[in-house]
Image (cartoon, rainbow, N blue to C red; front, side):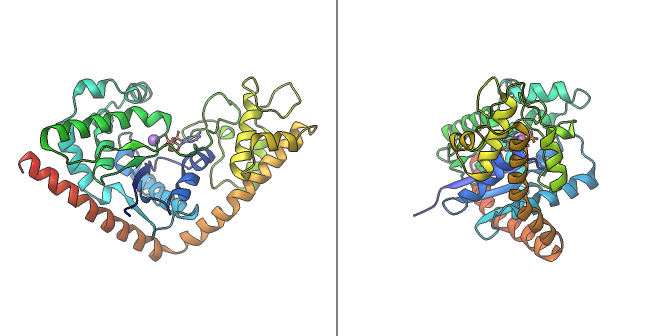
Length: 327
Ligand code: ADP
Ligand code: NA
């Protein structure tokens, strides 16, 4: 029986945080046996915001290494750079012609990004969702694991696919959101009411995949707690709740088990335990990153074969689409 196909990607726009890891990457590794997965490094999306080319190239390579280091197997998944498969851009152009300005105007992420990058509101930022639709539709994707912030874009992808199919017959599979075990939503350590994000200026708010054990322990020590003393998951205790969910995401324990484990323990003891659990989780990943970085030929071979495999699949859809529109 044909496995269902999953497409997902991440922008090489900075460091990978514990949030990216627990919310996305770690779950991806659990999908690789059951599904036929494509994991893309979406460097074309990244340039909708001005990037330093040397840094972008480095970050894309780092992201590839981290995909592999967390356990994504290049034999089981197609791992590749978006910019290496020109079919993404070709289909995106066609889809642009089947996407309405009004639809793109309604995207809340576009509005947010305009506010954040007021000096560079470029057309790519505006048509970002049609490139994302192309990413997904090129591969006849069944399922897309999306965070809350990408839900609206996936809805638009579905609308574009249905519109195109309505005109030309069944060309695209209409993708669904992947609703699996949800990954942990990790909050900023010192401001636990907002999510941990790589673009945060306060480094004490984020833990990165490559942080030293000492740095991790230090950041944990400085994480916000509250004036209460109980290690308990509760809405009015966002700091402690965040540390609890990090602890559980890493150890596999339930919140109830963790609460019991730390009943009567002070916050200091609890934070140390969370820090140590995170360190233990990231240590093998960091070790593997070092090994992979020393193996340039292996990485280059993966980059090349990933692009070839993706390109072969992409061509099937693109050829069909080109014929339909009259090329
Ligand atoms: P960032 O805010 O760090 O730039 P992205 O928007 O690039 O993150 O998201 C990349 C992936 O990581 C998405 O699947 C997103 O849902 C997930 N993700 C990002 N931040 C978090 C977080 N704090 N907790 C859980 N998942 C997250
Ligand atoms: Na994103």
